[in-house]
Length: 255
Image (cartoon, rainbow, N blue to C red; front, side, top):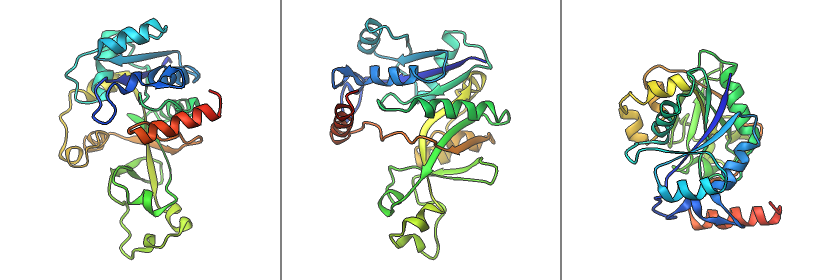
């Protein structure tokens, strides 16, 4: 069974225009993501973009790039076009790697891919990690996930879920928080045939309300298998402050 990592990349960004091509210690951010993905146990890494500047720059650097439409609503929809355009076999495992995570651990890509392979009833797999502090728990930019005893996602939310009626999480107690709350890590694996199916589903009200596209799968009854990350990826790059942190990390580690 083939495994392919696909990196959706758009040039436009409100807070960091041209984000994929921003220089990080001598390399464009997107090239660093591509290199990290290439270290995983995948057969192929593809950048999916709608921008000619990204296509030209990354092709010159030896990356495989697929040009896609500008009209896609989400990264998953962009993946669907790549799967169709490149005639990728239906049983291929596709790992959706975020284009703004230049330090994505190859182990995370392997883990999410293996998780899907080991759970044939699941249509998607993803990862999570424990939340250890109150500030992270209550941050609406941090997506929380609740799963059942079989490791299947029940719900994703920007709110604090499960809600603690007795407010025990109000104590700044890492042990209490750790026992109950998981932060979702935005890396996904799907089979190629499911991606094509997903792209024909309309967004559900839960998805629109939370602005979380994975809720569309739960709405339609799909199983999302989730596991705690063996290696937790550093946060992605959304702001100038994030960019400064990543540059410092890479510089300190001579990467």
